[in-house]
Length: 159
Image 1 (spheres, rainbow, N blue to C red):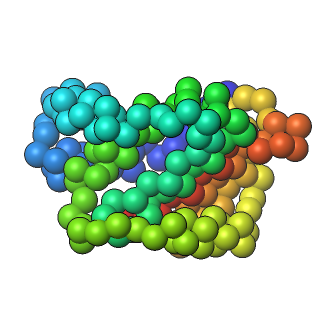
Image 2 (cartoon, one colour; image 1 turned 30 degrees about the vertical axis):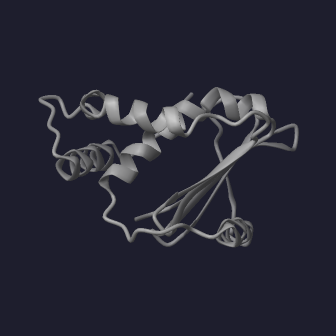
């Protein structure tokens, strides 16, 4: 199985980010953007390494919280840390944002806001149950549970 997506919108987003980052690709491959910025991504990943025992991450670009990922256990978080971080680094490189730092309370507010959304069950790709929720085009959230226990919760705030 797998998720279905509007492939046109996916290519549009890849193209939009490539233009914003000043990269190009004959095939519009996102991997070409990662290749162009591999040194910068590696630099950020070195500075923002997984912290032992962490079971999630909150990502801020400047003063704005842009994502929260929470996992069932540290081993799950460790497994996906670098991959998630790579995507967030590209987002940060693209962003034109106000210099500053987000407040910890804003993370709690975002998680509470996600909890209050109207969640809909979705067809999972593999095992477990998947749920999705959104608030307009601004906030998108997803959750995966297995045997009624959360495995991953993701909340993303659009730019």
